[in-house]
Image (tube, rainbow, N blue to C red; front, side, top):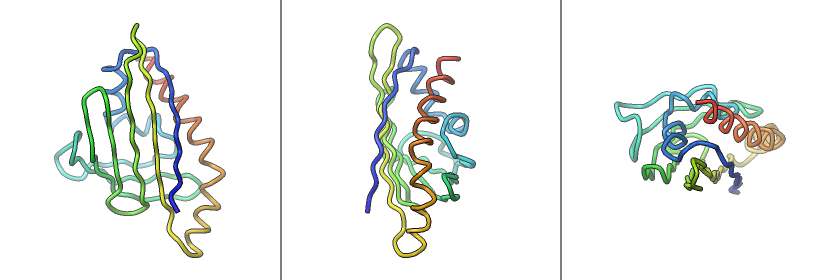
Length: 146
């Protein structure tokens, strides 16, 4: 069964600054809660086709290989798993004018079935709210400090 999480933040920085920060995988561990590893796979570092191996610790370590499946400068970044825990992350960026940007996050994930899946779900579910809040607050703080 798919789980969906949605969240948005408004950041006091121009859209090109916000997009560049979110699009830079070397910065992701600085703001995404629980992300302990993100390494590029291959030469491509951004845009459609870029792949990364990552580990997110949200109760338990969850491994995944993700691939950028949609990318539009200053508008959209979409990443979908190709191996490991099934997930899709869609980040959309809206220029609010006067140097402000809205970032909408839509995240869908599917945990494995059976006893192992139930154990993972038990460990992950209580942390999701904390992870979303922390990620949102840290993203705003980090980008506004640039």
